[in-house]
Image: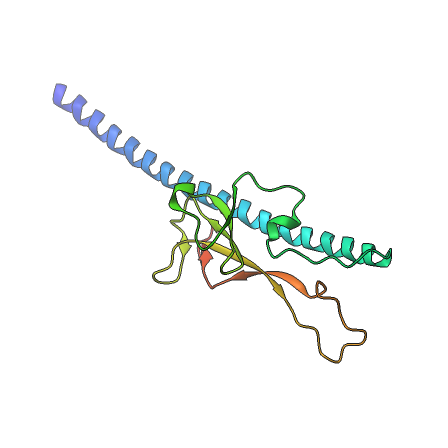
Length: 170
């Protein structure tokens, strides 16, 4: 009878361990998906910040103030910097800065997010998992009358073909 009890306990423990492993994997999945969502929301806030900056420049110009330009670093468009922002670096931020951070690459002129979790990040071969966005100045047609100001055609675009959660549904 003692052998039967031990077998039942072993089977119960195996089932419990399997369920816990599945639960842990799902929790990690949702944690990474939440990180991606925060990154997407931050980029959306930057796009809104860009529109506000354009409106400020247009209003200032209409009131006779000198025309201001837009900074290349989209973080400067936000009313406040994200807590994960580490500053500007010439190239990649040092590994000592950790993961789950934003930084501005002054060489490529890209704002970069280095994910903390990247199991579902599809990066180009030999590339690290990074989300890169850049302020792009779209050139106005040369025959535009009147000529468009330099800040008019600025937009924020994702750089590269990398994707987070490609073809992976909830």
